[in-house]
Image (tube, rainbow, N blue to C red; front, side, top):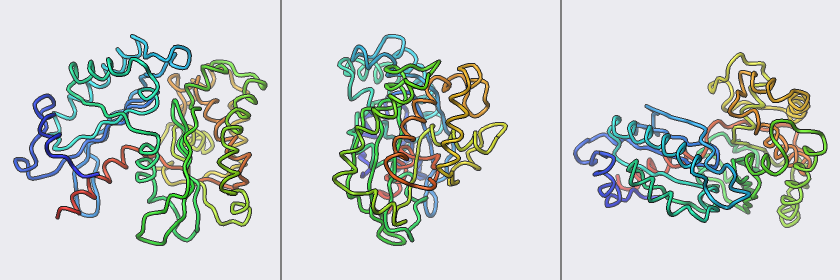
Length: 345
């Protein structure tokens, strides 16, 4: 992705973006508006990459009720606009020179999304770009690919979102070279959509099993056309997950008193331990899950849906462990910005 200076100039009037020629120091912003979260990273370009100088994350549940109505609700839009206003203020304060703000599954599905996009730019100055599931997967991969082991020939990378789950099948091309995408699938099963369909606060064994079976049925055609299971059995594939689900499971497994990204990002979690943590969470009620320092009330009703997606993946493919990425789409956008600087240098 090349920085479009015309687009940057057009948005500058609303957000106060600083022309690169005037600032002399590139400051990039990446905004990811998903079905469940609104996340912002602001970073300054530096030698070899970027340094994050500000960040923001808020659960907005933009896709709440979307699976039943195909519309963004007024309350969800209000919550999201409030978060976008905070993002706009941070973008101005940090003298951002270039911004890419993307929206994913909720906006892809909602029949009233155009109205929301117009309201967003009118009230916050942020022009959201609805990206395809393919582009969403590419950006997530670009953000977390530094965690892939170049010594293992293949990788399965997944991103469990609020409204969808992206799975990518990759061939590693050696040190210093980007992985080759062999195949990709976008499942219309995320933590919000599954929770709304099968339940959220209290999950019985039958509902949980139905979630696992639903996801597995959607993944199986992807397995059949790629025969990934055979390569996994031979030890030729690594598993990398980027989502709140996997970071939560890793934090719970380690018994952290509070979530710490520096400990979780890049860590490994055995599939056996992930299944034990899942069983432990299933035995809790909503309030017990909410009280856990690595879950909280905002995620307590969604965590079991995420566990079901992960369990379906691990049922289909016999991995022994997965690597945890607390990074993804936003970092991918920032990586694109840095690459664009290198190409024009």
